[in-house]
Structure formats: structure tokens, C-alpha cells
Length: 138
Image 1: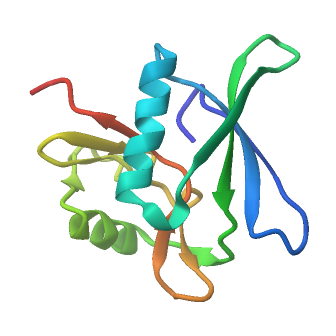
Image 2 (image 1 turned 180 degrees about the horizontal axis):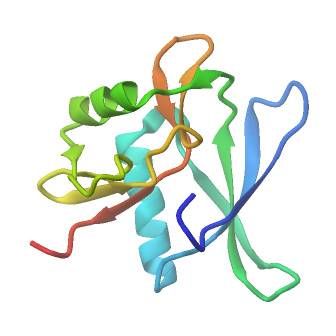
């Protein structure tokens, strides 16, 4: 995940969803919820559903959400992540890190193999956790 971002994931055998506690890296709750809505639009197979809010023992605000459990066959390669992003209208932003992508209106960030992996049943890359936000530089 991005520096400063943290998620804790909970699940048990047989569950079809996991529960995630996600620290918001966004300036406002509105931006955090906007990012979840954008993720859901771009990656509907791993839709996030907000079920609540809490603070942890350090007082950090967290969003509680559910997400479908996706069985990982293996981590996606850079080429597979590039192809998935390109297929959704994004291109590498050229920063040399290879994990951030741009479209005409959106940023996809943190698209590294721990957040994008190949699903066991479909043998295709899926994104379970990235940062999606509107471009504010245009």
C-alpha cells in the first residue's frame, strides 16, 4: 500500500467476503469515499462496501468495509498489470516506479503485485487495493 496507508484484513475459512479496516490517506472523508466509489467503478469484481467507521487504539480514523474474497494464484507481473491498466484506458505515468497509471481524468496509484494478483479461478489479474482519484492537474 502507499506510504502512510494501512489496511487490516479479516476473514475465516468458507467466507465469500473479507472485512477490511482501512486507514484513510485522504484529506477528507468525502475524498476517501470518492476513492472507494471510483475503485468500485473501475474494478467491479472486487467491489468495496463501506459498513462503518471506527478509530483504532492510536485514534486513527478507519473505514470498515467488506470486499469479495479473491483466491490468489500468484502475484501479477508488471506486464500483466500494464495490460490490465491499458485495457481500462490507463497508461504508465512514466515516473519509473511502474505502479502508477493515468487516464484523461483519473490516477491509479499503488498498482504493485501485492495489490494486483492473478485470480485462481479466472487466471486473470484483479486489483484488490489501489488508490484511485480524480486528476486535479488538468
